[in-house]
Image 1 (cartoon, rainbow, N blue to C red):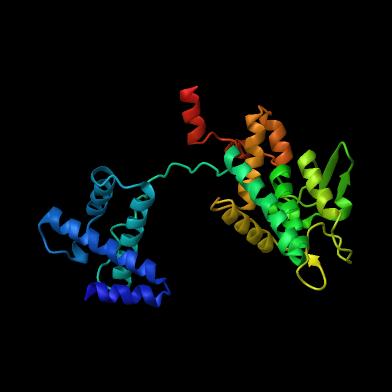
Image 2: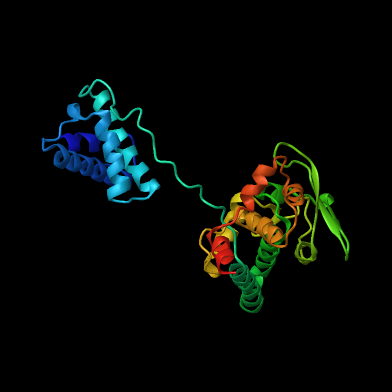
Length: 301
């Protein structure tokens, strides 16, 4: 009866079916553990803060669950007890002051050399196939290829890239730069462009349709080209991620990769921060923090 009422409460809160199933399973698991630990039938009114702390310890030390899983189970329990308070079954939530388990910070995701090669190969192969078999789509594929390559080699944020205007670019065979008019914090900065970024731009600009819009990256699928939206860029990266077998490929992953490539070349953190548009060096340190593979390589060196 209690679980049916709790389930209805969750569904009334418009929770997804999977969330409802997980919360119910977690609630029943806690009840089962407490009955075993106390040798008493489970009753909401008898749950104490000490019970919840002991359950948290049991999940960590005996079941050896990850912090994220422990915290999810605690969240399910807190939800159950909050519902019990709201429905008048208990006076206060005994888990209200229980702290979640601190999780080890996830290292930023970047592409290693093999993944970068796989991405570049997927781009080149996609261009070749479209030119041969789907000539009407080739312009879109040319834009996509240049866009992804440019993001990887410029380190720009997604919003900075899609906002670029033709007048913001200064390109020559030997050097180039982009003016970022409204970076994070509404800051303006100039970003130098390496050979690959310049070539990506030149490849696209050579075929970019003439239109009233002055943005660099255009949506060319419509009869009248218009500026490319951030959501469209994310879809482009998702498609290339599938082609290259790189799940979770996003503009931010490419930005992380840009920073990591520079760090691997022993470029100073101050220079990397300047290229990324960071004021705080501690922000840049997050981008270039060693991941598990770096630590393992250091031990095996």
